[in-house]
Image (cartoon, rainbow over all chains, first blue to last red; front, top):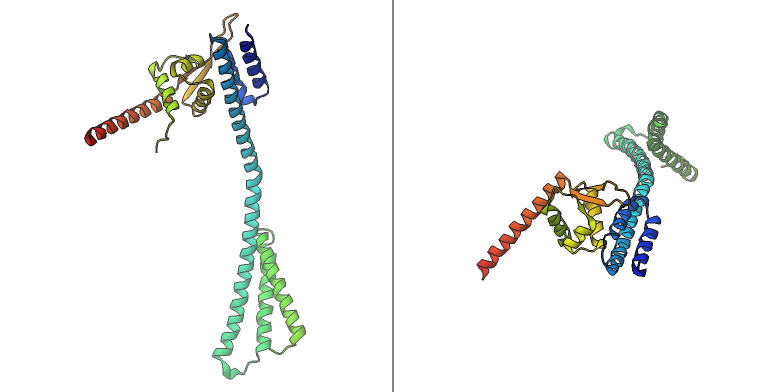
Length: 175
Length: 102
């Protein structure tokens, strides 16, 4: 057997041995054809072309496998993080709407009934207390089923309480 | 929308369409189409992955290594014929337009 044909055969066998399992069937198919090529140089060219084809096939299989693994790893985590963030944001939004509504109600009370001579601060405090009570109730109710939303509400409740405490500490009960 | 096929793929499909029922060897396809192994086999793999091509190992005879065989599946046959038809109608249109221009 001439050297070029021997080299072609050895090269192809070596590449098949080290290729991805999916590529080995195709590699063997190319190798079998080598025996039916009349010219030695044509056989060598066939082997070189086959080597390229096997490399491409192996690389494609590897790439596809890596892509699949990455998707399997990343997708649930991204989804779960996204859902958590959305839940917390929803909780904060609900709490903010509740606080704004309560304070607006108090302001409307002052506006529509000026003759009642209401002292604003206790009413504002009442609005905060009622809101905080609703927050605590919501957090307890949602904690098991919708924890991210409950966390969002809890964060807002803590923020509001901190704000009220700081306000009372610096300004007292005056408005 | 139909996928655009490369000239090499069209050449390969044409080779299969010449005798659609016969199994073909890789080297014979290469000789008939002039496609090198580095071009031919990736196309065969893609066609097989898309279930347009069926493959089989030749029944083993003693002292003779088996060879891989290829032929179009019924879906592949339909696909190849559709592409040949659309190509020939496109060519006819171009020829007709060329005739109008000149």
